[in-house]
Amino acid sequence: MRSASTVFLLAWMCAAWSVVGAESPLVVEIWPGKVPEETGNIGPERFRMSPALDRKQVEVTEPTQMITDVIKPTLTIYRPAKDKDSGTAMLICPGGGYWNLYWQLEGEEVAAWLNSIGVTGILLKYRVPRRPDEPKTEPARRPLQDAQRAVSLVRSKAKEWGIDPQRIGIVGFSAGGHLAIATATRFEQRTYEPIDEIDKISCRPDFAIPVYSGYLKPKDKDELAPGLRVPTNTPPVFLAHGSDDIISPPEHSVVMYLALKKAGVPAELHIYANTTHDFGVRASERPYSKWTESCAHWLRDQGFLKPRERP
Image 1: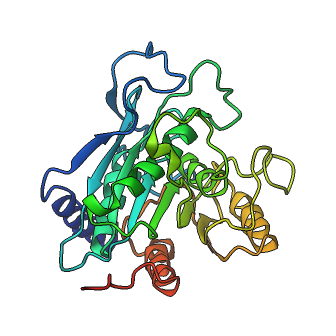
Image 2: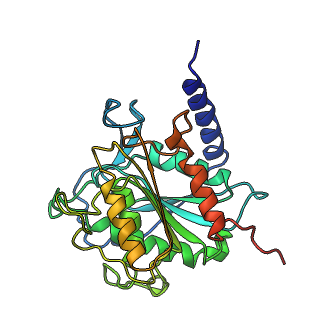
Image 3: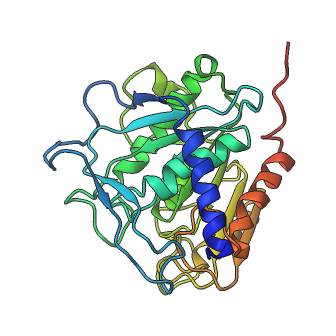
């Protein structure tokens, strides 16, 4: 007899894949022509399966699909049903330590959840793995170039894609959570030389949702990591983390929350007991799986899930 948690998982996966697979999503390249600082000598892009880890390390222990060797960043746009569409959109940044992208668990499944609450999910395929000049102990720098460009590109296409240009957020997981918060706080200056009219459009997200993020604090200090600062006009932030996370300890989100609060930025923090890493948005009997409901309530309270005004 199947356990209740297995039934939850099967039901969620069926719902997720039915949403994501409903129609072929639009795929758009982020950069026209040459990609900044890209040599393109890492081999062809490929799928691989994530390593099987144990419950002490991650919540989803079975292997899921990843992408690596990305040299051409893209956006994949998943639209919600027309009768649910709120006009809000979210860039999705999968995790993977800046080595891989957890495309299934922290990408496609996230797009399905967003569609279920009336949000357009825009899956960002940013550059991985780290290039030789990107140190292993620090966040890779090229993904932030991709994310900044992506926000401006989505905003430039807002009318065409049926999106409210003032309701474009970003959600990320693990290293992707760091990328989300870096994008939300580093909007005052591009990390690449502007190349066209799109780069004149704001790259500031309207809100950010970093989930079990890493790279937000030094290993032995309770302060923001070098390279991170919180401007007073940082957009609202929702953080979620597991208390038993040994890959990205919860102190990363705690330090960021305190920095946001000190800067006067609206922020909300959820830390779930007896919870490790990599829980994504999958439904289960465990309390952490309710973070998506809390997040949806937060989005409504912030005004990002109000139905769009009709003429």
